Length: 296
Length: 251
Image 1: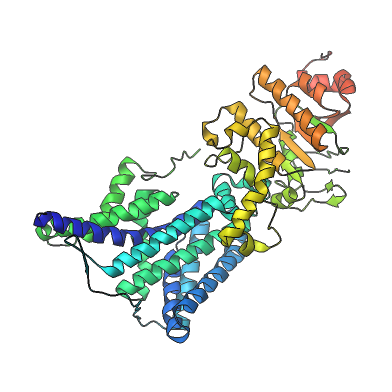
Image 2: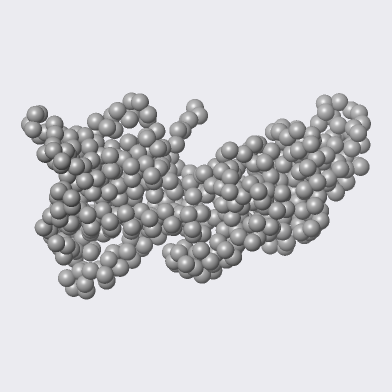
């Protein structure tokens, strides 16, 4: 293989592996958006809170129990949000509910600070760091394992939606909430389930991200990173979030690697937003999103 | 069975009761409040005053999913299927109130194995509902690709899968050609006979209503202007005026 090709392959693989994690973050948003048509600003704070809980507890009780505790915390949050935020706001505009999720985000950040303090924490997952060589191409084991975990999560989600009663209820509600209620589907419970799933996804994303860059309050910025991915993939499409995450990951790595040297770097930072801009101009519902027609 | 209520803004002192096992038709011109009335029964709208009883239980304050879980199924005027789901999945949603409801969602949802059990347990009923509407061969098709008449049948199958005691049908024959209408009318009669359920039906096709229903309620401007068996309704001058704009008989 020529040097450029090997370099390009390495970049693409690294990018795709990081992209899987982008997809995880974006998925959390899509899950809630599909269930309740709300953009959940608190997803970043949930990611931070989940990661902090795992980091804070794992030295005390071990990683598996820490993960379980974080899951329980997210389940409690989901039920609380449904009961005290979503239910009282039934029938209000999407913007009102969005603002409420901004409130949830700050409350959660405050709570995280109260419990865990505001020092950045490292997260070690006992993954060998030395790059593996596969057919002349170097691959980073943490990225590979991270991608594998994210992949398994996505598969579990697909199974959940295809095979379970609650998954079916969520899909029905995403299609037509009024008809779903007329079939006996409990909308409040479905919202809570969607938030729980988003919480579980946030924990996985938080732990994976945290193991790369450490767990700190900058993590809430993930919300901003996910936004262009959601726009590219379509905010209501699970496959869209996955595809867009991969595209952005690969685009960033390849862009930075090949174009970066000519323009003095920084390509990585803008690839996602450029892509989102193009999508908004030419296909505003996203690559795989539903085309919607708003009646005026 | 007593089912009575009075007074929503769109409906003034409307009161009626239907007997168990009958087909009760609600007719009236557009905007008369027929769908509103159905929405009140199904819990979508909450009446401002009055009572609403279902097999003796007061359900005026019940929410739609609670009403559904009591055994009230409905279809919608503008087909309200779940477009991203297959025919079978649509019908399976009608089983949502069954199996694992009391066990909470940890038992019914988060564990795949037991939840798959839910699907296989509910599947038999769902298949039976499909069969009753002659839809078995369409089971795995995407709902969106189906013609309108078939969609209407899927909606009926979904309602039937809920094993309801009361079925609310909002214009089940609307937009169909005469042979489709006849087929659906036959199915409605067959379902009622076979499962002994009570049906409240809104329908515009006057002759078909007259042949299907055992009793008819006529609404106009949110007020009941007549109630009785088809033979009486057919001769009621008030009905003729409201419905056809002129006095005269209908055959």
